[in-house]
Length: 103
Image (tube, rainbow, N blue to C red):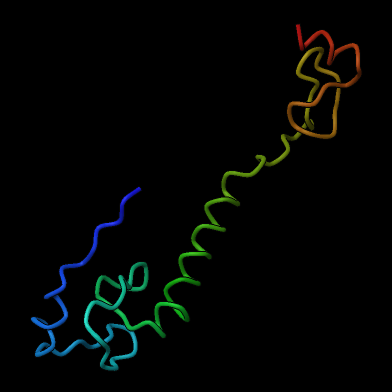
């Protein structure tokens, strides 16, 4: 994958602009970082590593937790082949049911 290089004149053209972090309100060098999901602005490197990235990791962990195995139904899990009770979702109750399910 090729990464797009920033134009070499970007820094020199924008040096007159004042960049202020949308999180801590401190000045920072041009470009900065995307402050989402904290806000829609730009942020400094310190806030990116200390606030934004941890918020993104937490959001990803919550998303992964939502994708985990669903809550056990009232009657418990049933064998995928014969309907007998099992400990985990999509389990088979015995080797013979497992073999039957693999056909």
